Length: 205
Image (cartoon, rainbow, N blue to C red):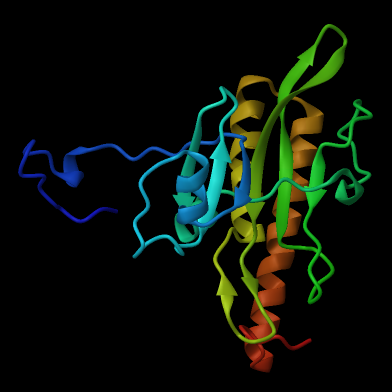
């Protein structure tokens, strides 16, 4: 995953380091580096004052600045309540899934999911933290936003259901496994049909 680069000061190479991914919720607003330096009463660097980025405030009150590309690669804006899907997870009545609207598809590629704390004291409970789910998206101009395939998500669910069923066998688990396999078979059939028609990979019906 990483190139073997040696830090001369430590002798540590990327190949003997582990990879980590983090999730956090924070507040931010677009702001140039020069504006941030003014707020913090820091010396200005004329060469970089116009550099675009974000002013960031963490939950503990700590404030910092991040370059635009770095910030937007790591964070997505939390959607407003009017875009929450009216699809609560049974038996909860809470709306915990939000979708981002887009003009091309009406919203089918980027979702935010409120993390669950499981079923406790007779009800489903949810945390304040968010998971982000970006599906692969080909735009009308041909550019691509990298993301998860529907089949990848279904395969994860299939693997999870099989392992849970091995631990706690039930008819319902067996039905879930069967349903996921039907979905994956339908995906395969659709791809094969599109390849035969020569439209696979193109924005054509």
